[in-house]
Image (cartoon, rainbow, N blue to C red; front, side, top):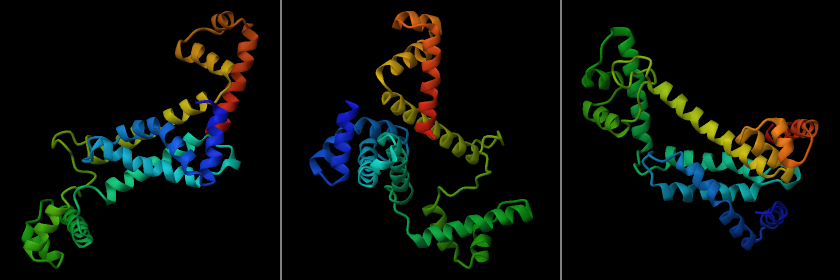
Length: 239
């Protein structure tokens, strides 16, 4: 979309224009879908994730500050991700009561403490007694909160380096990298046409400065100077 038209839509949407808001939501649906795709296989249907992400997009529209000069999509990305993460964490398809969550957390905490002190797994009766519960109550709480595991526990039982903690970190890094990629793409898309051409030739097609200059009818020195301006503009936008 034309940058000026997008800014005009933003102004109208931020000021409560419903038609502009709907059009802006439709124009940015691809961004929502690309983020929702990263959260697939989390027990929630992809289209449901898109709907939840759209709520984050709507919140971004309503809270966006035009005076800060931030690219809208860059501002919207963390709000979309936050909305999806919140839904998966608190409002997933499987509902667990707060009481079971609290009991399950206590049981896991005491289980790890028991293992550290005794070097073996406690029986359910022992663990229940430590936590002031009946064995039945402990069994229900553990089953209801089965996703609660020790972060240091080995996932495959053999490779001690392959833990839940490491997996979570890798997944977070993957998502963060995706966020950075989306933000960078959006920042590049807002650059002037000449700068976008230089970025495409130099860093996507990997042409030399001289080859890029010849294709654009410029001098190599001109391309070099423009690259410095591009880097400065992107650093300012992404900082």
